[in-house]
Figure 1 (cartoon, rainbow, N blue to C red):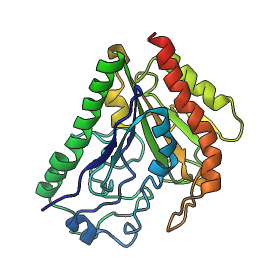
Figure 2 (figure 1 turned 180 degrees about the vertical axis):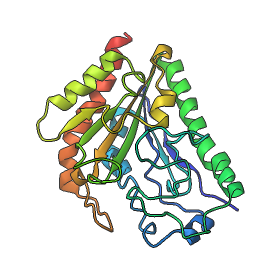
Figure 3 (figure 1 turned 45 degrees about the vertical axis):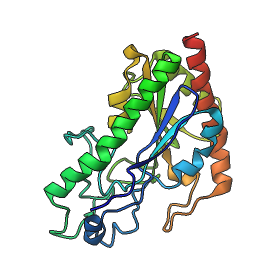
Figure 4 (figure 1 turned 60 degrees about the vertical axis):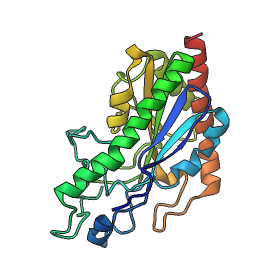
Length: 268
């Protein structure tokens, strides 16, 4: 079977890589044919995140975007599928939606052999590219920063109580980046009053943040999980809301800029 490219990559000049693992909507034939009616709209996609962060190209950031749906394989889960959270979550090969309904019709999940193929041809190349780019950035700048960009429906009772804060920063409980960088991103969020924010709340950072956040090696990682109500409509077909997005970008732009300023100051 011939697959599309596992990711799109844009190389920048700054010491920042933005990872967008969950915006993809490509499906393999066996996944497409096995999805339940509830899963067919691909509701658990991080819709429009590449468009929302398109401004980052002007900052010089490199950007990697996964092209396949997380229903094929979740790029932000470890290859051994070890759970990252003790609360409800989804795995490397999601068999349930965020709301708990089944992803696949009974008996129509991809085979173990097919899923192993997804690991080899989709998951591995994405992660190899992340590390290759971080190594290149470190060679050029002496350090590298990774920003893992996500979004999720603002209300999902199975995963969290009530409405999610607008901006959910994750640093693996402070382990994935230097304390100074944590302070900078927190200050940036605190400097505005339009959007609520939390650090290491329900979303502390998935596999990407935890695996590549190695501040002792001058490699810093931050995850941001956005509540989707702030830049799109949360009902099918999940359209982008430009006016909302523009307001949210008034926080996202200085957030990324402040990370770059911190790096330049910290490593000068």
